[in-house]
Length: 411
Image (cartoon, rainbow, N blue to C red; front, side, top):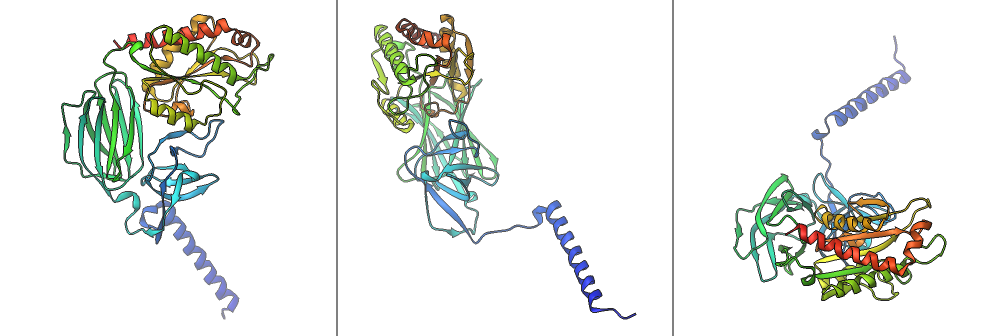
């Protein structure tokens, strides 16, 4: 039987389809058999004031969930772009997002070795001076990191991305007073996890920065104050909103949140002074516009032992009311709980203690901090209280007592 040209083409087509099926089968069930490499990668360095990493592209009114702040001039590998963010590859199995305004692109470079898998850590040193404790880690490059707190026991942990250990020396000096132990685990081929165990249960803050050479990461660990007396501490008070950021408004009176947070903050300042606190810092004392970055920079200059940020809440449902306190890091929760417990003695309904709060002033790890939503401007009963100067004084007194009770728990 003679085979026509059409039949021959049909046979070739069937063989082609069969071959494609086998290719898809192998790629799907055995992806590790094939690797696809690019001739180049797009690199960038962090820039600007307080660049920060986000876990993903999700959003709420406070923005995407933040991993934490970064130092400037840190090397990152860009793999994708989404709206106002770049997706960056931190390590083989970890990615995050950076605002585009927080990076400067650098030239493409050959990807002979994956950028996130070729840097080594060097020797470490733990020491202290008259103020703080320090851990210095020798590095080959300014690479991204993520720090977090754990409790029971009290620890600071830091993930260094794109780093493989070549650390064979960890020198610990007796000048360190707060750092109890220091070690690491290579939890992935290119993620080095640093552990810093603290002597006290309450963490008092830490910060990370590279030195001017970019070859050393310095972790600064704040010590617990030698005397846990509020009169000996540096207290910062933040009046939420201000200027063109008016905040919420009253459901009946239409008063603005920015004005009443300032009134309560000033009463808190008066109460602290009356009780003998000499070192007090107010992020604002009048109706002025301040961005979150500006507030954080001011606070870093003052270097407080404690920060309390004062706000008034609002809801689309006018029956929602009550007082609440907020924290970002688990080690700072006890302060927020102690303040809430005192404010509840004013007869306010409990709205709750809220953790992992994605608010700008809750982001710094440098000092214990708590945010207070005193009551709801959107609720008539709460609003009536908010309008009263007597209530402002009572709130200030309870914030003071909350801090004192928290300090007493640490003795």
